[in-house]
Image (cartoon, rainbow, N blue to C red; front, side):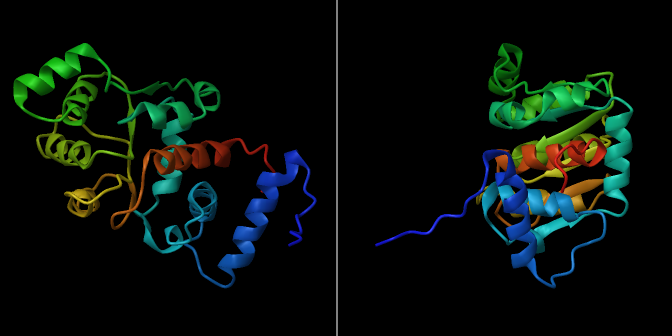
Amino acid sequence: MKVKLENVQPREIEARSFEIITEELGDMKLTPGTELIVKRCIHTSADFDYAKNLCFSDGVVEKALSAIKNGASIVTDTQMAKAGINKKALEKYGGEVFCFMSDEDVAERAKEMGCTRATACMDKAAAMDTPLIFAIGNAPTALVRLYELMQEEKIEPYLIIGVPVGFVNVVQSKEMIMDTEVPYIVAKGRKGGSNIAACIVNALLYMIDNERGY
């Protein structure tokens, strides 16, 4: 059996992937201003469901870009998401990426309180004196705790990217965030993941400083 491969140069693979995604989306209407975020999620996962299940609060893209430009840092719930975020691009604007999941004090607090480490991470983040964006791709308990902290007026995120993946309280935690006034980008349903959280952050960064030509 002969397999016919496309003749694409290495530097052109990503651009060609986005061309294919655009072609396959066809006439599907995406919310203006969110197209690159949706397409990058599809590019990362090869899952076109993200064209339907990504939800954006009003004006969230503009608010997110403004927060990044003004030095907001990012807190994520996995080392995988932290590794996937383009930290050099973020550092141009004074922001950093934090993940507290491996911190000893977080482990101790989680054990003491009988909660998940992700929950304890949100408490640690709430004590930070810096503007924050949250990129949650794994733990619905992180979203639940963020919701509680917002209700208690202990934290006011500039943006919540809520895309945990799984089955237990995943759908409910996302709906809780969508029921707040905080700017959000949420993947409704069970789908998501650390890779999706990271790629949404990167999409926002590339919307500010796009060297990729798409």
